[in-house]
Image (cartoon, rainbow, N blue to C red; front, side, top):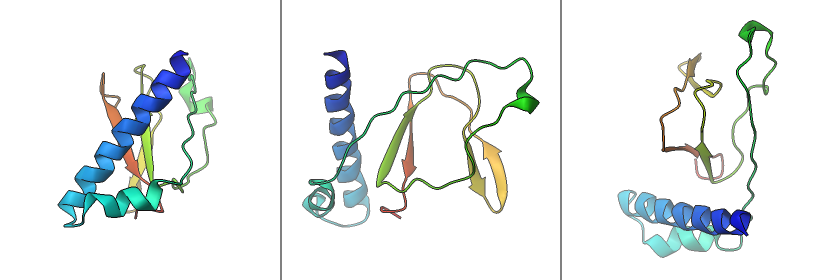
Length: 108
């Protein structure tokens, strides 16, 4: 099915990102692979249509991602993701055909 295909491709992407991160950290790629081989992969799809009154939108409460990596694909121009930098919340503009890679708590 299409969902299985995307899950496999997403897993391949995550493994490649882990290899690149290990290389940049001066580690052997197997070290990070071993840390995540028996881990869990999940996929969630959300749709947030544009709201005519954005000031009334109730989003997720501020949080950190507890995972190793979060791969986020924003397929619309609806802006919602924010990152905290030096105490201020900064909006992340969607970039067409690109994943946003969040380093989760486990990786940090």
